[in-house]
Length: 380
Image 1 (cartoon, rainbow, N blue to C red):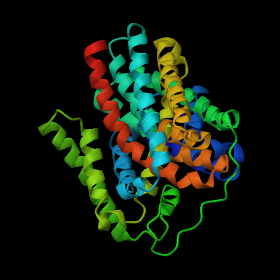
Image 2 (cartoon, one colour):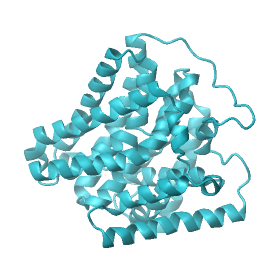
Image 3 (cartoon, one colour):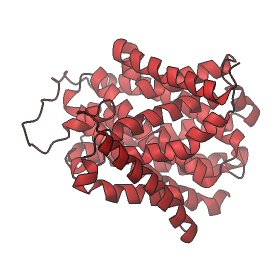
Image 4 (cartoon, rainbow, N blue to C red):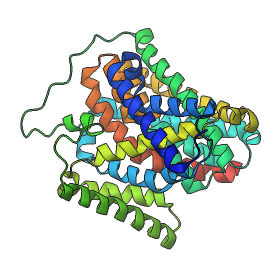
């Protein structure tokens, strides 16, 4: 077993590289996305005994690294661009987020006795991760100080349920009514204010990253993390993750900050490393040790989310393709939304799905914190 922290980091870096190559070269893995592939590979390596279930490397990635990653990704969120995603995608995303919150409350009320006194924490984490992706799960878990064993078991349950839901979303549009394949989204005209860069920003800076860009990004990201932690100490009514989200979103609206090259790319890389480490922390045996209630909790949240987004979405006449992409933006984040839209040939939904998925990184933290505190008095 690899135990040296530096060696563990090297293995995780290799996992991310392999996941990215598989996503780029193999259609099946392209439909899953590098994030999910990395989680599953990390999970495989730990469960066969190559990687440890705990390591200082995981602690580093779960703490400062993921916070900086959150900051760097959120620096690419232009509120105006999110609004350009269009009313149909925004409506679908909002319905899905509401379904997630309803599912978390439902699961907590049903399973509170089985999960235990930290039920409210998991409700907040599941709300966050199933509103905008896995990075919210870690951010909120750190804010709530969820116990390591419960966190690890919930991570393993999240990985399994997320994989199942990706397969479900690939199938549902066919069952509800196949949309014709759409051509790839056209490249924008010069100077046009469109979302084109968001699709590629997670994988390419679009231009050379200068040392000035790098220096500015380090200053802004680490400065935001530092300020958020101090604000959380001074005004503890809000945790550091909400301060960080708010600070970076405000900074991202400044044109000079948003124009810095490479923020989303480096943020995405840190998130991919973190997710791979999450997979490595997810020893399936922990679910048995903690109890199956944690897995049932994740299933209830996603099942209710699915019923709400596809049920209500169809009632308000949103097409199945839009709903499936929005659901993946909720459950898996922008990379999963892009992977599903690409796999199903919904070229017109790629950029809107990525836009609302990026917005979900921010929205999930706020919604998860709200749901957790709502349930704290009921189940805590």
